[in-house]
Length: 345
Image (cartoon, rainbow, N blue to C red; front, side, top):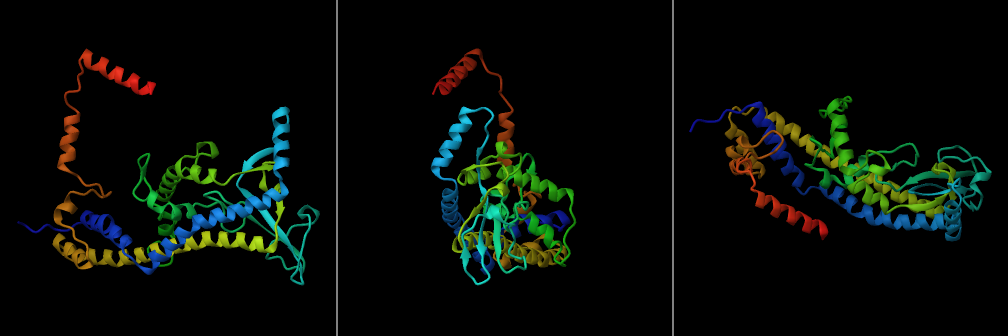
C-alpha cells in the first residue's frame, strides 16, 4: 500500500485527539498535586462552613431568625430576611497581640494591609462555587469551578460549543513565550459554554446542575439588607485563621491545576515541532508508539478534528433510523396507550 502523506489535519488530530489525552492520564508529580488538592477541598469546605454557621448563629440566633420570618410573613411591606452564602468576618487585632471584643459597626473597618497599630481585620468569605478567593467582595471568578469540576467539563458540548476547563490557563500561557493571548471570540465562546454547563451563568434562578447542587449546600438565613457588606460579623482570631486556611486551599487548587496543565502545554509544544517534520503519517505513529501510545492510520483517518470517531456502523444505523417511519393506526393507538400509562405512573 502507498504511504500516507502527513498533513496539517492529521498532525492536529494526533496532537489534540490522541497525544493530549494520553499525557493528561500520565501519573506525574504535577497531576498528583492537583488530584490531592482537589480531593481535600470539599471536606475542608464543609468543615469551614460549619464554623461559619456557628459564627453567624451567635449573631443571628435561631430565635431572631424565627421572629424575622414571622414578621416577614405577617406584613407585606417587611422584607428583612433572605438566604445567603457570603459574609464579612473580622476581629479586632491589638498592637500588643491581644484581641478585643468589639462591635464592628462602632469604628472604621480596615484591611490587613493598613499600616496602623490597632486595627479591625476583615475579609469577605464566599462559599459559592464562583466565590472570590482573595477576600474581596467584588472579585467573583470561575477558576476554582473549572479546577474542581474539570473531569465533568472535559469533552462536554453545550449548545454546540465545546467546553474546556483549561481555557483560562491556555490563554494565559499563550505560546509558552510568557506573553498571554489577547482576548478573543474563541475564549469568550468557551467560557460561556463552561458557565452554561456548570450552571454559573443566567442568575440564581437559572442555576442548574453543578452550581445549584454546590450552592444549595451553603446557604443560611440572614437578617438585614441584601448586601453582605451590611452584615459584618465578629469572630475570634483563631476562627479567622481557619477561614483564611480554607480560602488559601482554594487558591492552591487553582495553582496546582495551572502548574499541571502548563507542563502538558510545554510537552505539546515540543511534540508539535516534531510532528511538523514528519512527511509521512507512519513517522508520527512511530513517535506515538515510542511514547507508549498505540494508534494506527485507521484511527487517524476515521477521526474528526474534534475527536469524534466516524464509524461505518453508526452511519448505517443512522440510515436505518430514517427509513420505515410510517405507522399504522393500530401502532399509533398502542403508542398513545403506552404513553398514557407512563404518565399515570
